Image 1 (cartoon, rainbow, N blue to C red):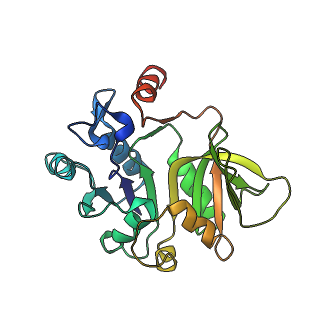
Image 2 (image 1 turned 90 degrees about the vertical axis):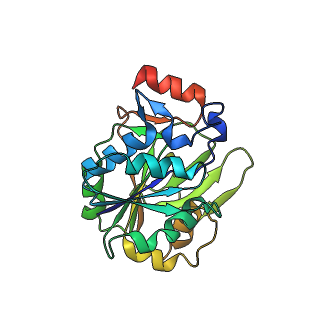
Length: 237
């Protein structure tokens, strides 16, 4: 299995911690966020990890080179252009083990979910992609039917809504920043350009099996993208 860690973000919400370093190297419980993400996907069974870089890219490259890891870790360099989640994934295509699934985690996510159970669910349901979600308050929701099929997306701040399957009784869930997709989906996402991977999943949901995995209520999940949220996670994880 491949894994990719999205580590190219500017980290503006984490200033001043990111004034002189990338978000992925901000420390959580004494280790960089990137270290925690790498350990997470290794435990899940990843054999090759790709890390994308942009902001203070060389610091991440040097950090990875300075440490010994249990698996191969490659760099996808987005120094010239930040490609967002979808474009970043497509740019990394040549670095993945061909025809093996790709487990993706945002570098600024801390979770306690058993990823092996999550992967088993993906395989059991023969999904083309499985998005990890949690029942939580947010301003942007993924809309799921009773079978946890991706049916749409809703922004409660501006009222924007995308419906793929116009099904009654859709439930709202927050995206967790973890997703697993089959390699063949990369061929269906078009050319490399900046775009949101969530939008691409919505575009593909009519022709592909795009499902969700709901985290347990007791599972810890923290988006540590701000200083306050990082402090909260340090206290409660």
